[in-house]
Image (cartoon, rainbow, N blue to C red; front, side, top):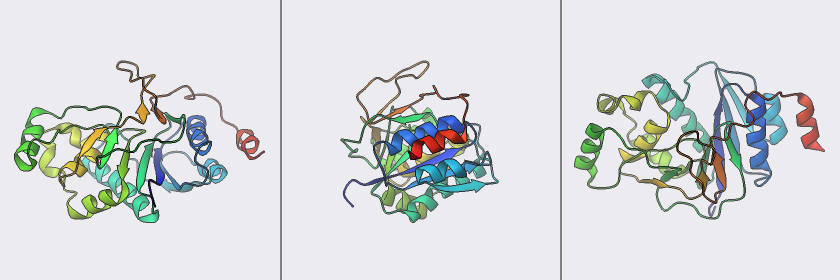
Length: 235
């Protein structure tokens, strides 16, 4: 298995951006498994067929911001299903604003990792420190982040109850990157900043580093998409 990787991607609209994100990944990783879930949004089956990705069209919309707790659990369940369907060591989270710049050189020493270290609300941090000690606690599992597939499975099956933490930080039930990171940490697992994801075009706090993946790259948003683009990719 080595440091093999797969991709999980949740989408809604923006077919051109989705296609370009997947095409950039396939420029460097030709056969690695990809799962794309339409979050109650458009039909991306043609795009997924063109790039060799598994496509699932869900009627449920969870969003990745302004979520509810049931939406968070649905989001985690979809990732769990992907993890059960593949055998990669690592899973990279894709969004339609992620681009692949090169292959990965370094995987994290922690169980999950993302581009930056965001701070939980003080009450949540206090509870985590009391339970697990002085491990650094923060979150950042947005597009371009990575996690150990088997560790995610173990955490999901052991303890995925997030209800006790919603009152400590309301973002637990609203932002996807926070509860995903928290799932690892309530099971005693670790998060860190990953050197292989940048956010060069982040509108307020850019992160410029030599990285395999770049998040918050929205150049392709609202650009036209036609089937001819898929045919061109086959030539």
